[in-house]
Amino acid sequence: KNNIENRKLKFAETLTPFLDTYGRDVLNSFYDYWTEPNKSNTKFRQELERTWSLKGRLKRWNSNNFNSKTVTEAPKQNNGISHESVMK
Image (cartoon, rainbow, N blue to C red; front, side):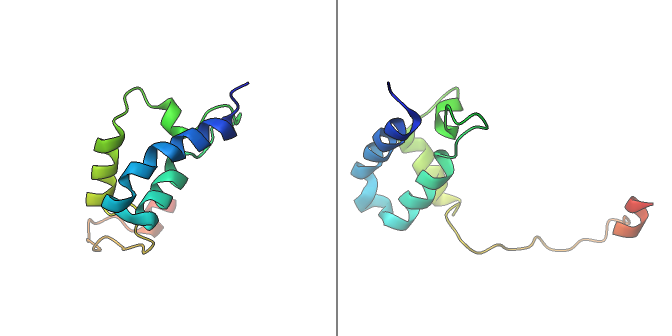
């Protein structure tokens, strides 16, 4: 049976040719994100996508710095709505 762990291993192998281009850290974070299992643990995130281009996804992942460990806050804007007014 082709269980989820075997499929995740095969997915990891498809990333190997991109190691020189993107580096281990980028590929590890990409792998961690795209191999997150669904609730029933039968498929992982990449398998649930309708379309998939590994080269394209890696390029976008890298250009958007999705692998960044730091969280940056968006600039605060005064839009006239306060937390307090929303909660009432």
